[in-house]
Length: 579
Image 1 (cartoon, rainbow, N blue to C red):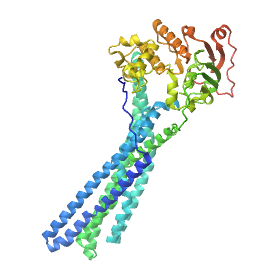
Image 2: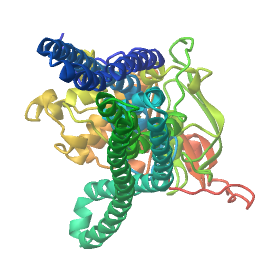
Image 3: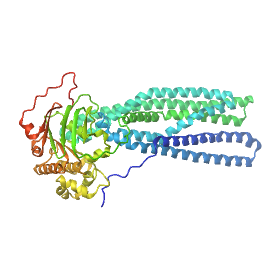
């Protein structure tokens, strides 16, 4: 039996803390050895000027040259290894967090209102990985060696140490100024970029409306405004970083020449040799190099730090799943107990005190005017929204006690806005399960009454649906999504306006599917605007203003006028969003 692979199996990353600790310790050790080996340059100069030239010994020069060449080769090899270590640290971090980042991208809108680029967490992780794997972080490994080189400067002569110390203080001050003047700019730049990208996403999604109603010019003006804001903030932060970076580089060159002049003066006085003078100027420059590199990399460091802090903020909304006892599959009842709910991140309730219970083999129709809370109830029933109060129970077990996999097997959901994933019809029906059997896929399609329709497609079940299902009509997408909801014979099937895009044939297939689900002992909840579907409904729930106006057998509830439902008092949170 062939399977329909949607994605490859996830790569299991090593524990994040262990991978980072081992990698950073290794990189730090390599950095230490590289910094020690860097002394070979000044030592070589010292020996050439003080030993080789006075003695005019060619063998000594050759021996020193070979020694220096070997040390340089070893230092270069260690630098390459350190670079590869940093790349692997970055990869370990990426692998450890990529699944979490995808969870944020997929579920952030169910936890809090999304006002920016939905893919921003992935971009932030890319930014962090690039900083760790690039030269920016390496500069920070060299910083601890500045005091060591400073001690060498003092050892050569106290005046070299004082000269270097003075410039170190200036470079530290420049680093602090760079941080203070660029931190807010970098944060504002990131926010402006997020706003610009979000506008671009909206324009892409609503391209037809923009063109048809002549909105392209107005939208383009808003884009230009947000883009100009982003580029202005970015340019200012780059200017500041370049300004202080240029100052630090100039000062280092000045101090290197000053060190050479100081050394010459000490040679004239007889306190130093010519070789020591050259070596001292090189060591002074090497002492200050890490600070200059850190200033140059400071913008990248701030960007990575901002990205990391934002990731931590969104990760807090997605705590690691706790192990749960596997409960028996539900087969008996659906209980809704005192549900109060609001959209993610909002305070205004769209559902208040919804309570009912139905048994297996029952279909419930949820009706009511617009903005009465019908779609909100559907989202709560499938655990897409977490209620502020109350519980949804299957056979007495609250949904949050079930593992994600267990809930997925028990629930089928057709949302109001149908969305299909890029892939084949079969993959979409199978919920992207690479191990799904063909028989289960075809069975779900037949149950949804879409099997014959699929056979008429160019490649049948292997037809590519395109991005969002663009290769299918609205009715075809809705019927494929219905088959996806029915795949695996779930116990609770929630259908939000399942007939909104269906013709008469599609509505007949939907009615037969609901009858079949009831016949096998499952529960169906149908959010209905069109009353034609009520013919296969057993119970009706009427919602008004987010409250339960009536619930009971269809014939009883629809024949009596619903009791008036008062709007919430001022001290009660009001409804704020549609459905």
